Length: 415
Length: 84
Image (cartoon, rainbow over all chains, first blue to last red; front, side, top):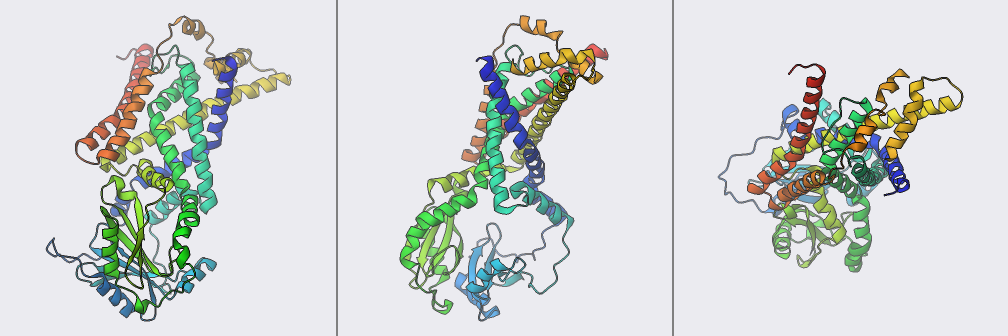
């Protein structure tokens, strides 16, 4: 490699790193509490759900139609929007709203939320809990909720919604570029140095450089994977949008202009769940949205199913069941880019291998913070020298030592 | 400005140049492969032995890092202070 190409790599590494370091520090620090959010909630807030009735473990779940009827009886005149069995509790969440139009109008008022939910015991159909009515005062927020909320929003979007997500996605891409260029530089710097040596008997700068190299080399693959999957995650809104305007629009075209039928005359919800389970064998049905929902068709139940094995648990396959007749319209596996997105999620969250994996994730995250900080120290140190050189060029009388330092360190940078 | 002066690596350069070049990549590749194996074994295996292997594989890069740091710090403190 010529000095010239090396210098180019150095410039790439410097600028890509500088651009993304601040945001990466934010993401790395806020990511730590998010890794353990379940445990943090359990410890500081606790589960405020009413206890479930103790029933024999093989008690079958009740017919979902009974639960939907109960919800309707509680709010006559309202519409049911979603029916979602809980993943790991024997509960069914029924979401309702005054009308589809009211839900649509919510977009215009940031503080309005017309939808509300009712939680039922899936086995006894007893009502367990309801969402807080909107007229009621908000319960005082907990510190945990406040801090976790801030961390989550900073981590995902820097409080800037979709533009923030896309920006952080871009930073993820820049981070990957900085890792690649850093790897090239590593190959040059370490030519005469055994792996893992940290020279502490020489200049402080060399200690920082060795630290940067060691920590960077040890976490390179992890940082690349988490950085890249973070980028993919930030693209979920446009990717889902792409799917909606292509495949989904194509599938729903024949039905797009039909009126939404009254909910009094729809086919059975329980039968729709059963039909979907048969249409997507090996998958479990995780929820149903009623005809007229913003993501769906005016005349179909949309049922979300997902793989039953842990690896495929994030691969969702929507199933359409005609809500007028109860007949299956079809199951629609997601396109490759959304499958890729779903697979890349666990690799970003580190939530697929129990508590030890989360702890390792946290430790690796801390090491990456070390890489970022040591990189910043190296950059700041060099800047100081460059400033000194400029000052000297302007005729300021600096220490002799600096005269030697500048050329050597610039040479070191490209060596 | 004096803070800069101890940072000059000039005296070390001749020593560096005379050192034979070493193989750069075996360690980073090994640690990277272990990381990749650890990430995938938990994802594809999901339980039992695969989880344990994943934890083991992912901790090795961390252990190696800590070992290198300990070695560096112990070596210098023994040179400087002669405590050991």
